[in-house]
Image: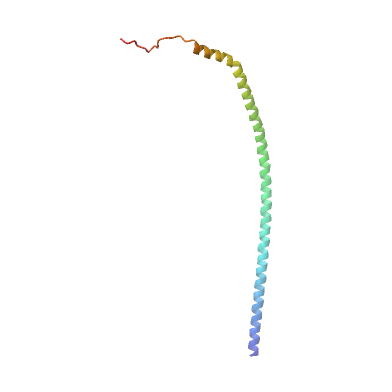
Length: 118
């Protein structure tokens, strides 16, 4: 009986050691997963910062030229408005005279398609 009890004790101890090893392996796996996740996060952050920096560089290159383009368009618009305003002031008087002449000087005529009643 003692040998049987001793065998059971050995089995229980072996089972306990196996359970401890499993727990330790699970802890190591958890630590490794956590470490891998942290490394991946760090790598993602580094990549994101790198891409954002490249984007900002490209954006400043494009926006800088857009700023110049915007200034050119603004200048052209101002010039066009100035030209139209000066043309308006130059031609306003003569156009008003022409319109008034056409409206006020009426010469009654019979329309060419008019046929008197027979």
